[in-house]
Image (cartoon, rainbow, N blue to C red; front, side, top):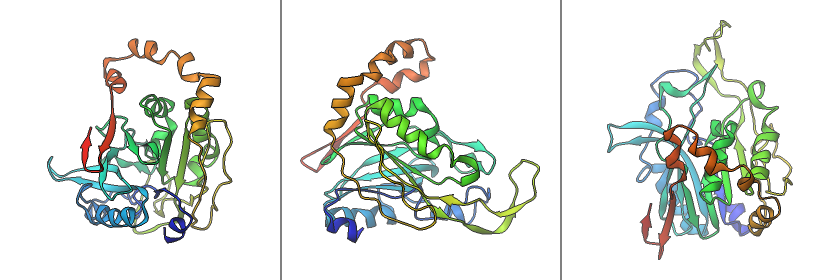
Length: 289
């Protein structure tokens, strides 16, 4: 982060649940739930607040959230911190996988924050957490709510999804006239106790190889090279947010999908996605949701 700040980069995002191992494959409650913390007052949030203010940077900080006001419910959450160090708000994971080792409902369920978009000093951003990238409608909702940049903090392994990785977020950038930033961790994490995947195969101690390869895709279909699949790295990209409107005016994909008309024919539970779900900061003090 020191290096990024030295290059005057205004936005930064970690991979999913970056302060802990991606241990949900084990289905062990302890010790992993001990990493859970408050989104507003937790250690990770306070640490990122200091960095955001110090470097005049917006930070997306994915954590395992413990909601102390509602029965200590656990959530997979991304905290968005403004360049002033204020907590703008949080976005919870909308889609929970139940695929092989990815059975995260042992720990948390689908989020209840909808598709929030955060107005920052450097553009309107949203956070489509991990598994949400497989759902085109998820990207669409964030874009419809005004997102210019959609971060996708992830932890995904080669055998399962590497063939999809270069395609999904790039397609989402094109279809929704916005920038997308898929972020993946790197390496293999080994756990002391063996676990099974419910697929009839032998028990094992690791989840698979996290293949990194983070990149940024633009609404015109261009993209950066990916980061390494074997080493941690820092990707710095310049984004001209005017390109979002320019591409929209040229192609108008979102209008041609007749999304609002289609929503009228879908179950009632989708209707709230089309209500105002912006988070704004006034005078860098007050917050309106």
